[in-house]
Image (tube, rainbow, N blue to C red; front, side, top):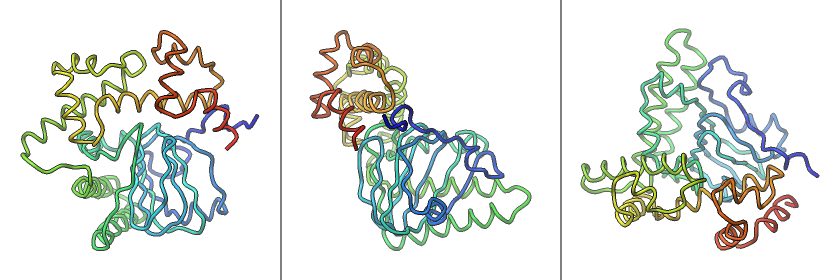
Length: 296
């Protein structure tokens, strides 16, 4: 059996071999050349990644969702999220990576990360497409990061941190999922969405019902569903199911856990209930998915 299916590769920040312990900036073309164009296996990072694609052809796999690479796009990858970039020709662009500690040390609020709805630790993470005028803005910010990170000897992290914050604010303002309207009502919705996402991440294996999360948030299930859908395009139920399916696929592909064991680990009383849930949402049974994924 192919060893890559035994355990998904996970990169730590130390693997980047950078002087800074919290921030790194790499040219995508340099990564491509260093690997001689070979495609890495699907893997995780223990840090945030913002991938700025200027020009590229190929595909981007993010937690089992596949996207065609296009020029002038941004991708946002959460710590722990599985992804894989595959290029059919030499690309150009940048990869900005930073740790959660970098955000803390530079007073970049977690709220800013959460408000960019394309930072998803499960489910779909579509690209943020940017127009020609804004490409120059993003390129300018990243080139300044490069200049400061390679030339300054003092206050390097402060300078770079300020630019990363501007980059995130710029992305937030251009995020296609960000809704306009009453700012006060919008912030209430944002706070609710952040709380809901945190609760799902903590309890997805034991709580599968929207009502469970609504109770913890002291609101009605109907209100939670409507608010989450208005902000993300997906209902609260779809978010919960997406988290479960993503975790199930990860474990089926990268571990040897049995279907029965996995069903109990993910909070299902019977393996048959898990099998039905998985087939309804993935289109195949867990066993069929494991066989197909390992043959790909």
